[in-house]
Image 1 (tube, rainbow, N blue to C red):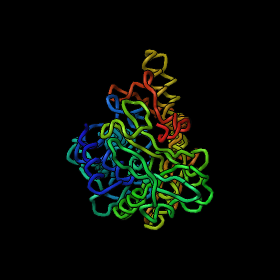
Image 2 (image 1 turned 120 degrees about the horizontal axis):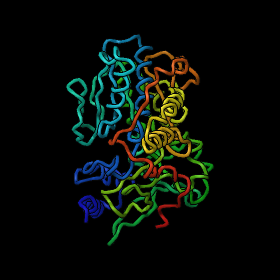
Image 3 (image 1 turned 45 degrees about the vertical axis):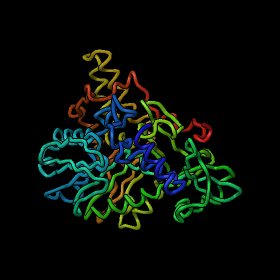
Image 4 (image 1 turned 90 degrees about the vertical axis):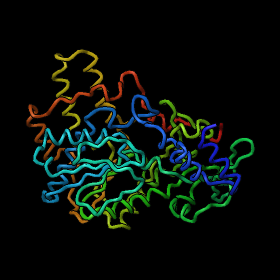
Length: 409
């Protein structure tokens, strides 16, 4: 029996049934070898991979966007780039490399800091340290806080509509883990669903993440002037709480495979849900954060020159071996594939900044046109051995909409 499973059983025996949110929190973050506490889940040898591990194009696009933020803020002497949930630091390294190549003057004023609750030991030199923390323990900064696939792993409360009323899912133990429904544990659960609650049909299942809004407040409190850039899979509230998703969006990953049985592989599998971006926007407004842009990852990368990088690769195809060309082409396309990673959402919020539209949210912007008119200055980006070999892999998020309830197991 895994130590986290034992911890959960002891907790239930001592205090009675626990919310699914508590079950998820301990499964993922327990100090007794919770999923994120005991392993590096991302990459070739993990259970899933993310956009930074797909192709360097992702980091290069973000690097370009970060540069424009520095420009809009009138080139401050020190610009902080804080990555919350930085994992092994791959995104930060790629962003810094892109800025070194495209905007070398900016590099002298940029300080990247990676923050993760797990000790990743990936400091990028003395100037770009790593901090182990579950919060953002920094004084208010000028710059940008970025997260990529962070909020989807925050604990959620599960609910179900039973006899026309909302009930919450709890986990009990009786020789095995069992699921029961009872009254909600927190009045903010129905409040966060909002007006959509009245239209949900009988037996509808879903999730509410109260922790995501709290994180937004913490992030914006850490910004004096600048931006909050959130990239994740999810929807606005009207689409999230929709009959098309009558069993919710929760699922888990184990060895690059999807599972809906959360009572197996406890402590060794990921658990994840779609993000409620309406809630992120509204919590931002309550904490002096203005929404400045919301789009898909596909459009965001395209607006920052994604197709021009692809064109540069194609123009060099005759000089490359078949595998190198196809692997890089596939990696770039995967980032913009609207049936997978490209359907992720990109939300930009600003604090004490102008409402200027940024390049990633504007088609054929000045940066894009400059790259288009000077193709000789568009570098050819290659994924080395640290990236996922995508030609022989499959990204599981493309299966999000074809799923059955995990309660069927």
